[in-house]
Image 1: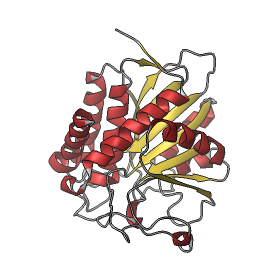
Image 2: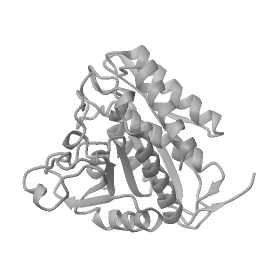
Image 3: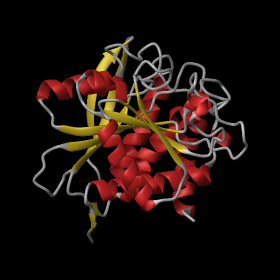
Image 4: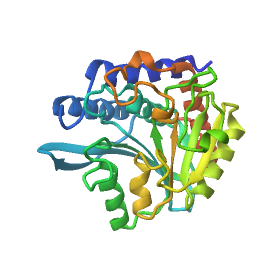
Length: 294
């Protein structure tokens, strides 16, 4: 099941984290290679790629965006994002090669789909330290510019580490006290939001559960709970937009988080593909999308 999707996801992760390897401003040649790979993949899918370029730490950087216009009257767009830089010292297979791979495959699956609600797929640069939380973080640059333009964003979804799934009891950890309310087996995908965004997250949960039986958990809580704000959705919260994260829970499950061992062979590609297909069907449902022939 989903064999082609599984192979496509694997290919993207191996290209980004295996062939290119560590890619960030401290390895600018590799960062630009990752940027070029994403750009070329989207262009090969028939999309026009828009660059939001800026310079930091003496390196030219860019957020990358493609747009799917909506056929409906609602002018609000859904933003689907993932960061494409890897942390210093890591090739970033799961963090966040998996998120980028899913982003590329979701756009491919939407090639012959017409959504009623407009969508933007965005690959953000510079999510990892030393940029996280600060103005030169790629998604901060993007969200601030969107706010200044008055962009109508219905909500944003951050794809942050989607490739690790474990069926062994005891494979899942949590922030303090949450272990009493959630399963200790790390075989699920998690939806994570702040309190203000819980309504849109619940809508997405309902759509996801209607199209797949893949295990899922969710939490809407304060941003200060450890791990809840650790991705690009934080940038949108800070600009007043609603946003949430979809994740395999990162360091609460994945033992190679932010290490040199975060390599493509560590990911669980079959469940990763099942999750990605579920997210595609979820987005189709949320945007009232219909298939068209071209």
